[in-house]
Image (cartoon, rainbow, N blue to C red; front, side, top):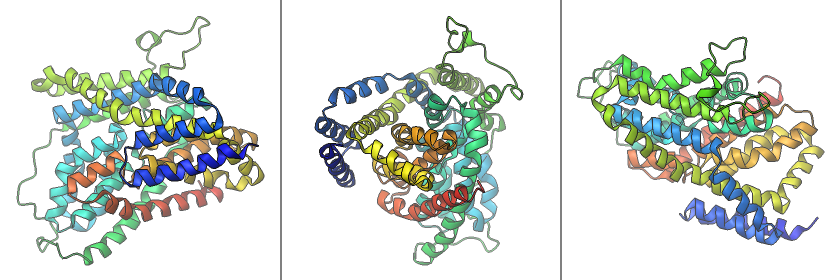
Length: 454
């Protein structure tokens, strides 16, 4: 084995981490590191091909851009705010439940919205003043918002791109992954991290002198009446989610099937085109846009414009990260690090599941993208999983969960930067506050998986 490209790859990874921490653009750093590593291994054309292929790959572009477009339409019509108001309303009356309540509400909102940043934005307008009125510091509010919006709620939505990454290698539908594989892992992670940040928040608040008074009964003193909730609008964000679940369940449980001619024509041999799943997500989001326009007719004329604005944002801020991180992963693979990882796993099969969780976690913490981490690294574990008779879908669930945790504790992740902006805090402060709950949660999930409980 040629150790020169391996040494260059290790040095490039270290340099990338340092530059990202110093504030350099993540995309520039990852793409530059990929080219340096590929040059050392003599495989620059492979990285260029990967760039072009991922840049135009509809399995990312269609789901991500359409989901972001739908999120923009929800914001434009106010439907996302009504969902948040509906979920947050009970929390206004019990201060002691604000921390876990905000985390859980953000988690629930992230399931239909998919985008962590959009989740943070639509909750921020309600949650920040609510928790400030209850006397919580901005750092605590930002940490709760960040954890809930990014801990992994989107993994329960069949439209999540991470699930499509696993589907393309295993042919197990995203709906089956969300229901059977990810649900127990994600809810375990949610329960553990919520309990820990709840306990830690009590300690944080004892250290601050910024507390504001609340009423003696424990009711949060917001100083203004609760806005009126439109239940119809609050249900609009759930429309694409309901459609995807209804059409993506196993055949014996499926409520209805969307005809191929509405998505993509079948192949000449009569089989369904693999692009059906990613395009079905796009169709579900378009149906959601239509329903949102009907629910808010006074805003309907600008819904298409908002949809494409959101789609452009998704391409510029999410797809771009996936493209550069995928190139970085390809370069790492060409340098031989993926083979080394595979050999290590084959020699010590017990490391398969811990590595499947913590290697993507580390990569996502550097890159700031859980989607990019899953796309780049799942392939490193897929072949070793098959060789050792591990369920590759189960391994993919750990990769996705670890990637979500790494993204949440990344100071350069878009959702972290947004939560810091909404609360006027430092993103590194928020990342440090959520790191311990997330790491403990992932360790617990991996331990339970090794024990055969999950």
